[in-house]
Length: 144
View 1 (tube, one colour):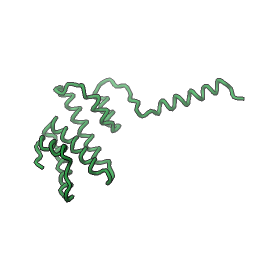
View 2 (cartoon, helix red, strand yellow; view 1 turned 90 degrees about the horizontal axis):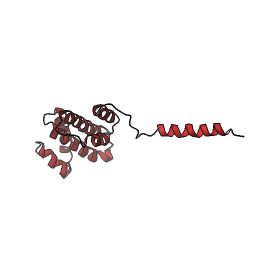
View 3 (cartoon, rainbow, N blue to C red; view 1 turned 45 degrees about the horizontal axis):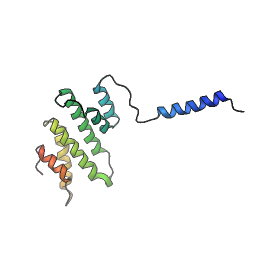
View 4 (cartoon, rainbow, N blue to C red; view 1 turned 45 degrees about the vertical axis):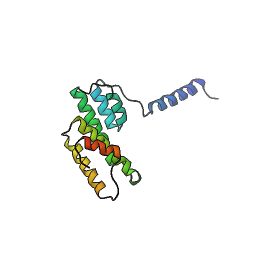
């Protein structure tokens, strides 16, 4: 015969365990900087960008956070792919690096990564970035 209190505790323990395993739980942070850094570390770039979406783009601190998020998002896209989705990831990376350059035109990492991806495209006959990516690259000074 099962003991009703122990059965109830077992169910409660299981529920608490599953609640703790929810990957969408984000800890509380004292500052937006800390939260964005955490989201970047967790590869949760869309969530980080959502956090920054309604912030004042003219605030230098917000611009730094946006630049950092887009840069890391682009690097992530470049470094996590398989051959079947390479074109999608490279286009996404180029979009992110373009956003970095819109925020900070002097960002050398974004410039170098764009050049590297474009060199790869140059080696593949009849391939180029998607049209919207080309427009964005031209907007930030790349002639392709």
